[in-house]
Length: 459
Image (tube, rainbow, N blue to C red):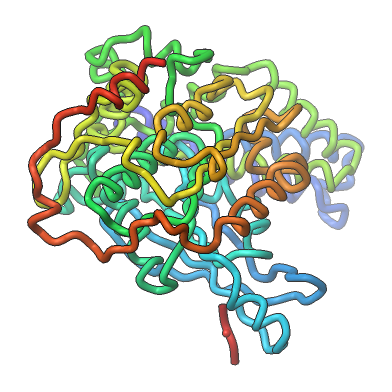
């Protein structure tokens, strides 16, 4: 009912938002009769702010058209490589007719970036993708808004997320022979599960995993976000944040955690900051500071665009990651596409290098939560295992902005390059047979329990 009320209110507000936008342009145009008024600029700024506060924010676009490789500007073509019911695998294909640059592009590593499915769209990682494109062949998971997925497409669970990641890894391996995986925030947990299961089956693994700011072990340095998930019961979340999609959308009837509720939660974490930001925007408009005003618009175009998450996936993530801590306790079983349960055993991973990245000031994934992956992946030699803490960086700073580009990215780039050839211990087998995939669950190893405790032209 709440979702329907919200949609009704939004539909009623939409004409007023458009009116505010038109009024802002009329008062802001000095050639307009209304623009001759001595208070015109102030009125225009007020209407502009009203429009920004009342408008509906659609899914942003990546908008990456070119990237610089060395001193050469090359073209980017974005396309959907694989289209699944709840996710698109996007490829950023690079084109150049410069022979030397083409040779360089062809030899660069292929990287699968697994974007978060935790509110915002994958475009939140736009800066991540743009920076990575200079030295890598880049793919990214672009998760779909659950309200746009018809119920006929079936359910979506945390297990499905893990299986999607495995399918995408196999796709890159089929195209390039090998690949690397980077996960940012929420997907660090399902990515580690996906690679662990592939290792247990004897499949070829990614050459490296880069895990950034994720809740591998949410018991370490719990943040306000962690505490909310830990202190409220599963039933509380199911009864208070889950609603059916209204009839006006393709996914009508699907149970979701609505984007507008998530956005309200984001703003409630720091309301004073957002109020000041909007007041500053109003001041920038009055002062004619177009650069600062445009920076505000770009940030909030991204920040205010939030997707609905399927209820099954969301609730299972809360229980698995933040309440039962199944990954670190060695009790997580994932259902494979054949319907069999398989135990997640990170200690089975060998021949895959591991880099973890944390921000010193991260208030979403606390200190040590991501680094905990090293304690679980005991089969990875220390020579191929590394942790990096970005000084002065918050959660977003480790994958976007100046600190990402100047501090974190060089570390990620060099780590991937250093492990771009298969190790002797790597398992280089093809995809598992149906028999192997449907194997029964193995009992947890004593070692696991102990560890849980302690190139025309392209490239």
